[in-house]
Image (cartoon, rainbow, N blue to C red):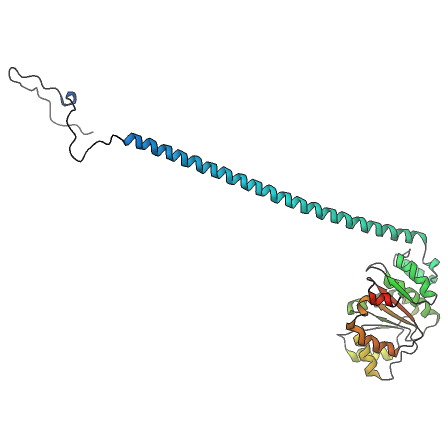
Length: 307
């Protein structure tokens, strides 16, 4: 605080006057001036406000704790649901693995019992298989190869990757080597991709007998295909629509009267309304005396009717 520059002076008083007390010692009975009244309830109101604030704070804390508990419960429920889903997925995977193991065990049992030579295949075919690191036949091969070599019609049910292409390619190649002429076999398939896969296996297995084959599918030049067909290949691998187009456009130049084998690969798809007209036209061009081989991954009613 700034100090006053005025010096204190003694107060002179008249005889009989009482000494005047300093202002700080005087009674404070002076009534407050108007406009400066004292609020006697002030401290009480402040206490009430503090209590109300504390209650509000306590309520907010309680709500926050309740919200956290709800979130934890919700998280636990979600975790429980995830755990159940994971357990179900693991059970399904275990079942699939068990099924695959059982199928593998069955296939191994067939492979361990017989050799390709015991199925009746010639030594040159057995050697071709050895060059491909194939020493034992699969189940579908074990069941179908002897029947085809015996001249019987066959319906073979097997999943993709079970060796079903070799199950019909091997006996066809053996029969072809005994009496080679063209056209010896017609293989029909629903897709061009599968047609090229089948052709590849025929070429690898039939390399030693100078096999001639042609792939007749949509998306390729028809004139080039017609020239290849005119050279009378041993094996025609085709989709039904494109082969029927060639039959209709070639007249008498395309002779299929001596075909020994007709193969329907993925017969469940070929024996539908989609391919009905094309198959009908092809069958009319083929001899009635032939071996018909059907291979499918699914035994549909249409396939079973032919059994």
